[in-house]
Image 1 (spheres, rainbow, N blue to C red):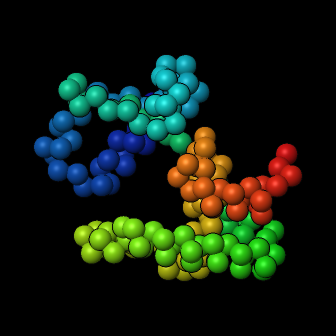
Image 2 (cartoon, rainbow, N blue to C red):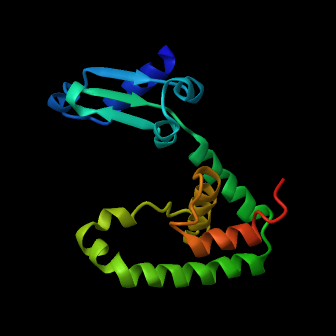
Length: 163
């Protein structure tokens, strides 16, 4: 779709990428999800991007599902979850974060502090974390191997009786 390609090119210019980096792109293909499903293997469609560096080719599959799911998560958090369920998620979050910190967090905080500035300061951190995991639950084919306890919590507290 030409309008998708134009939007991608516009966003590239907004990023102020060095010219020598942009010159590496020889081919830029932008596909809708439906077009991509017809032309690419599902693993590439789900990755939303494919690069063939040898040919200077980039294929993008714009996918707004994650962002949509994240924003829907805010509505679920604010309008559907009772406080005791939010508290339950808070307890799970503390345990998971402590485990993560124990394993790799200290090293990551020291070497890449920029990774920890992605929360919107206007939002409650716990709500943002909920929304990220809400998106993972909906958009990943199976987030259970990566987040088993969180997956089980969402299945029980948010998606039980899902239609």
